[in-house]
Length: 64
Image 1 (tube, rainbow, N blue to C red):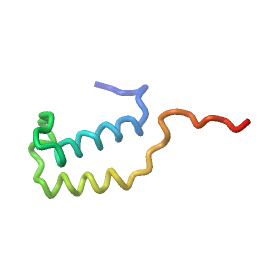
Image 2: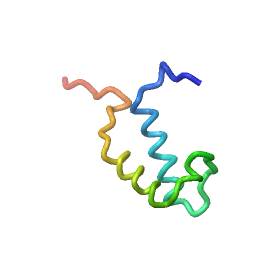
Image 3: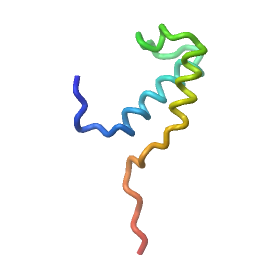
Image 4: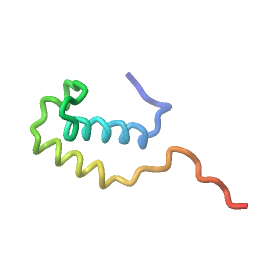
């Protein structure tokens, strides 16, 4: 599946949400890829994803 019209920020935000669902939720949504990762690796991935500055998904309002 190609995602040419989806910004990288949106993709990273969704990945961040899924990783933290795996880390924090006692009953996370099943994810075949993330469920095979060790807890240590999930925490490392979560830390890296938190460090990435995401572009705003909506335009900032212009000053008048």
